[in-house]
Figure 1: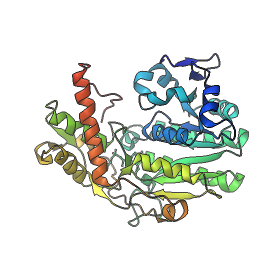
Figure 2 (figure 1 turned 60 degrees about the vertical axis):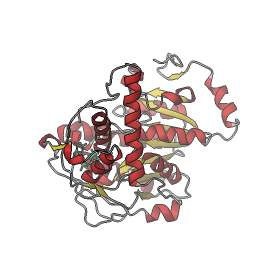
Figure 3 (figure 1 turned 180 degrees about the vertical axis):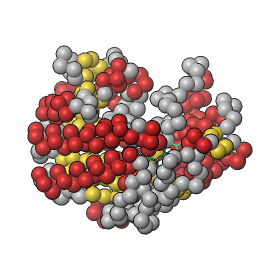
Length: 370
Ligand code: G4F
């Protein structure tokens, strides 16, 4: 565990310093809102924590025990924030553990981001994806209803719910046709969230977020896989990039923009569901073309087709219509496609050059099979 954290006897993790007084100084003391984030160690959790801290919130996070046991890897996205966060160990699979955290924290706002979020993996293990994602959301909603019914709840729904799309672009009224256990689990979470809103009066909102990326994206997702390989190839550390379906099109935005929409959804008078997207789609091939061109290389010399990365059922095109979010939340994306790709390539180059200079080897943090 990092030196600035300590584990209390009740299993909570907190900074070694007396953080309550630190926070009161930071926030000005009164009317400080408290937020609880599941999935705080992930890409979105890290950007959302930054946003909420900047707005003066007290930010609590739920993490798995394995994260506490391996903080160097699993908490690297939030390492710079650790002195200002309060982390609690709990499991999405355990209603009792979530109930206890919610009862103790009594958040004003809860952002439920944690999930098995890798679509490919959901074909390998449908059962754990469905269990974690559906039960996790159900446990969170039931615990909030029981011990913090005034807490505003955000559910991270997904454009994967549209799957085999009925129309393009998709909006909040487009019918769902999920193509994976992951997509099915998100439809179930979306419907649970809506049902808790309608049946029990919870302030429960869902963001139907399209693909959102950043230099903090996990290496298993295609964008980060591409940009990390481009950087390695540029530096002579790799010579090929194996990919699956190059024709799939996604509406790619920047994660920092998308967490802003999450927060905005919980500031409305009434809870509702919103599509969050840029309104522009590009194929995996186009992403690779732009990424290689950032380092003056031609993608055709390096990309090779690998059957291992094709999916049993593909989502061919996702393109979002975020006009409702624009109209009602005032939300607009600020980062364009080329800018996003360039930022990711640049960041991966810097990371590898830095690692080389420090002679620390070039192992990728958080590497999983991709
Ligand atoms: O980067 P991906 O793995 O993301 P995917 O499946 O679109 O899901 C992401 O976005 C969703 C929102 O729409 C989230 F809900 C979800 O949690 C996740 O964040 O794959 C993007 C596309 C797919 O069509 C895939 O078949 O890229 C294609 N692809 C081609 N070659 C590949 C590869 N994907 C991966 N991961 N690895 C490849 O080698």
